[in-house]
Image (cartoon, rainbow, N blue to C red; front, top):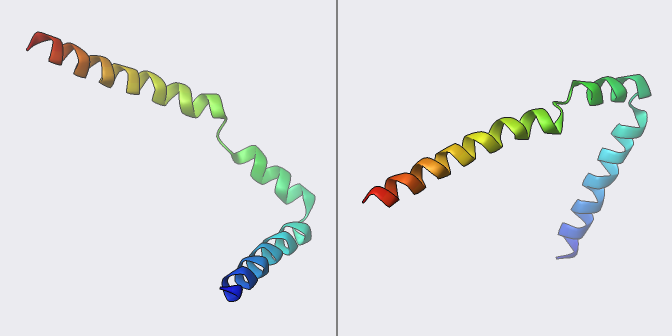
Length: 62
C-alpha cells in the first residue's frame, strides 16, 4: 500500500517539475487555446433541455 502512495507522490512531482520547466509563454498560449466555458456549455444545455422536453411530451401523449 505504501508503494501506491510513493507512486502518487512521484507522479505529482514529475508533473510539477514539467510545469515549472515549461516557459511561461508556452503556458499562456496553451491557456488561450482552451475553449471558453460558456461556449461549451451553452451549446450543450439547450440540446439537453430539448431532448428532455421531447421525451416529456412523448410520455404525456401516451
